Image 1 (cartoon, helix red, strand yellow):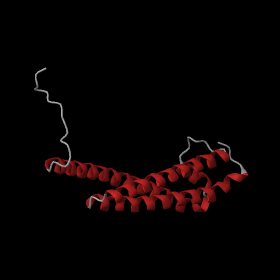
Image 2 (image 1 turned 90 degrees about the vertical axis):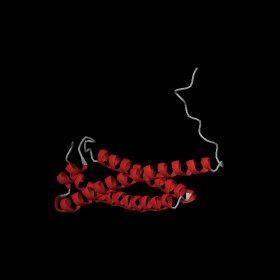
Image 3 (image 1 turned 45 degrees about the vertical axis):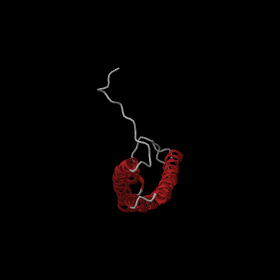
Image 4 (image 1 turned 90 degrees about the horizontal axis):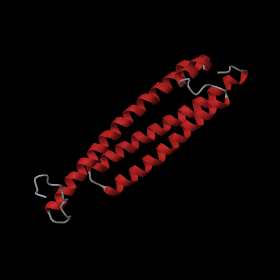
Length: 152
């Protein structure tokens, strides 16, 4: 890593990127909640809309991560160096605030991931129940399963 006079200029850009990532995380929290409500009410259209919004938001989050990597590369900061270390090295009087923002973002993303996994399980369960009901009503063909006991 190279330390130079322009290294201090990295902090405003880094803060901006972290704040934009935090806004994405807030959007993902709202999307996850809408998705949960749509699954509970078996609203297929709302489930699809939430899925599309999730994809768009994750793509934007990926773009922000790429911008952060580019920012670090522009300032000749090793890509192996964690963001927490970059903040500690360059943030001076902003260190506490930026570390808190980074930690909160990390914790928020972990919670979003957990809620998303829970929603996937709920969606799978809802699909299974709906499929079984439709099959029992004769509105959907029964799934054929492999019967191990059958003679060949």
